[in-house]
Image (tube, rainbow, N blue to C red; front, side, top):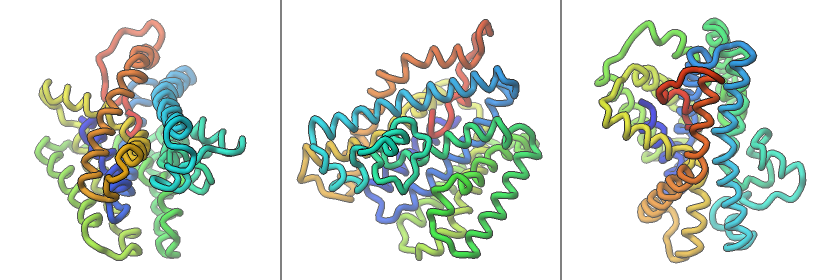
Amino acid sequence: MFGVLRLLLALLVLHAHVWGAQPWSGVFAVLAFFTLSGYLMTLIIHEKYGLDGAGFGRYALNRGLRIFPAYWFALACTLGAIGLITGPEFFQREVADRMIVPQTLGEWLPTVFIFGQWTWLPSLLIPQGWALNVELIFYLALPLFIARKPEYALACFLTSVVYTIWVAKLHLPLGQRYYLPISGMLPFAFGAVIYFYGKRVRASAGFAVLLVLVAFAHVFVYDLVDVERDYVENTPLYLNTLLFGLAVWALADVKPPDWLARLDERCGRLSYPLYLNHFLVLGLLYWYFPELPRGTATTFACVTLASLAFSAFSWWLVERPIEQIRRKVARGEGGKPREADPALEGSLLR
């Protein structure tokens, strides 16, 4: 029951980039995505793939099939828009200052293969791609160490808590508690801890809904109210991870009726392409409708609707044909067919 949650989190990222006066809805949403990824990847490692070499190979192949085709499609569309429609400077000027075509091999490699796509690179054609870089790193770290045993997950979580206290005490900037992989270990390891230890206590569906509402209310409090940045970068930043972690724990046991399960699946399909393509859609809307006001509810509504439509097209064209391959990889050669499992679909990377 995570499809609706994933789509709402992707919309929070879009909100931060298009309309938000403050960046906190996007920051909080990405950290929530990381927590959900930690939980779901630990779940499928133990309940679908296993910890042996063959299981790891199927896991890695399935993740690659999910991540890269949709990403490459978004990248190709962005390059096409720049090369054929807007010219090289429009996106940089109107959307994101580093949304420019890479100039060197060192810029092209992380742009194409995601690994090494850090926020300080001069070219970020998909500006939010840094989070995919962090996801990929932990997609490897989870089966290799963090998610192998409960005590490993707990040790990594406690280590990340110590790091978090240290950076907070030194008043280090947001970049060192948000963009770096070591900062990502807190939500990812927390997600793994939820999988290992959260099964001991179950939550009702009503309590799960309440936790989700509280978590989103917490996001909007800091996005709508003018609060000192130094304050939000500390306690609220980590309280957000706790609240969404509790929401993930509670939602894991929710068994929705069939109609809601189908809706949840359809919403989940749109989350990743929406996350990938909303900057592209925003730039094209600005190009074709130059009178469109910047940073308003009208623009947010237009970008949301256009991004949802483009995301549905991306899923139909790119992801739908690959889905059967991924299902076969997930169950292994010669394995018995299984029903679709939302856990196989990841979080940010559905």
